[in-house]
Image 1 (tube, rainbow, N blue to C red):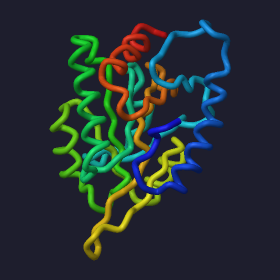
Image 2 (image 1 turned 180 degrees about the vertical axis):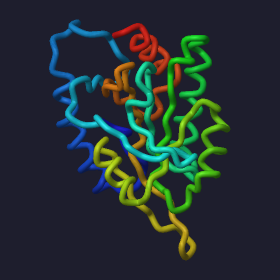
Image 3 (image 1 turned 45 degrees about the horizontal axis):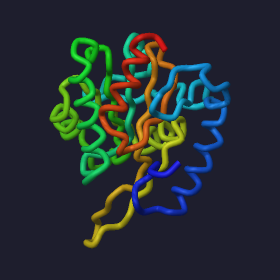
Image 4 (image 1 turned 180 degrees about the horizontal axis):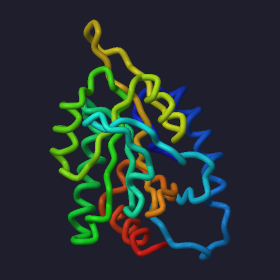
Length: 207
């Protein structure tokens, strides 16, 4: 389960890794060859990630039901993230382009874990810089904690070098839901756009 979190926050990362490993067993307990050969971790049937109720950058309430009919990729991060977040969003945008017309049925959703600094205007501009179709969600700190808990996401502030500055350690992978808004995959950071395209094709085809 390497690569689930960023570099720091080792204790939190260890707890998260154990929690995810346990949760993933339910989705992976199937006979060899019984299901599609995904590149990402198959978490089909997991008992988490079943709801996500947060406002978007326009202030409109959103839920997973809004994305039914599309294959949805959900990533928790923040706009000032220096590495994992821009890389992940860029790979998702690349994957949508590689899919051609079928890419229109892939929905990217970015959930900020830093609502204090990520204003709605900032989030709209941030996700649009990767792909205009991406949706940004921003809740209150309390709503953010509940959403992260629902998807077993770890995040924690790390003090910076100057007073008041900080970064946020967070789970580095993304979740992929099928057209029925059911949680299907966990894709590790750094897997690459090609592997993502492979899995998206399978889900778009009804796998």
